[in-house]
Image 1 (cartoon, rainbow over the protein chains, first blue to last red):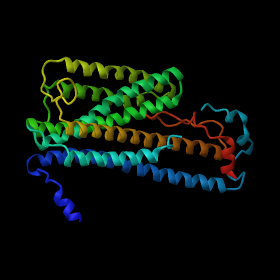
Image 2: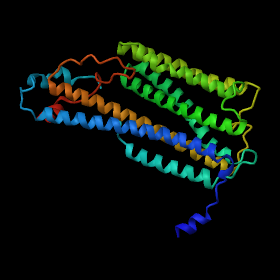
Image 3: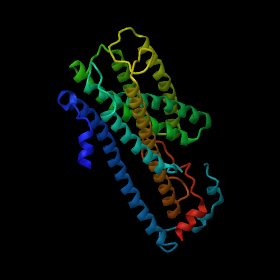
Image 4: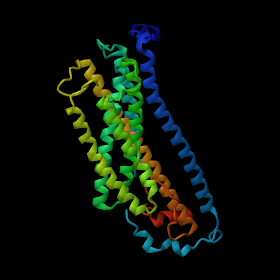
Length: 81
Length: 256
């Protein structure tokens, strides 16, 4: 069935300007691919940071020099949106 | 905050790009003079239009930043201009490939559309160095907004000036002289829509990533018991840490 569907699709005239058209679309594809790769790196960094935060939150109070009174400072709750 | 609707937008973009590619290669007829080479226009022209509209949008967002002094508008303006610059690189490369196939040269300096687009690109290429050159975040965002507004106003003026020039070598896709047949026009509109969706999706990804990083920094500070924001290293990107809203109760829950 797939072969029949592919046979119905008109052949692309790649012999003339095919390399230029392919080049242009590859540029777009490459730009998106590079962006996705950069986003993947960022995501892995965020994952690592979240892991560090999780380990920080699991520490007992006062171990990391944490000031518990600072957690409930009302001035910090009114930070601009 | 920025991640809301990202999934739907991403799926829409993938579908639109797939439909656009299908129309370009299997529906739109071959152009009489250029033949298969004309297929480049379905990626080159939408890239150019979206990039130029992005530059103008960056200026409009910068106006909103100067009006409200809200750093989030500066962040949006920065991301939109940053993405437009990437799209502009794509426009220049695909345009050069078309010029080589059609005219036999990678670049033609006597062609006003090419040179004017290069001028706009080079103008915006100075945006990031400008930001990086200013250390104080407040001044940096203010000066960058002024730049974005001025350059954003230059883009339509530049476009009109090129249109008014008499030496027409560059093919016109849109305008009074346009005579695109129905299937070609439909393919072009779908390609433009797909490119606009791609632009919006990438901007949203960028904003979501930056906002998430800012939230993580804020949470780290709270868990470490720091009261003041640390001095960050010099960066071209806007600072968001002083506007990140992480309710103290939520931070407290995380700590427990």
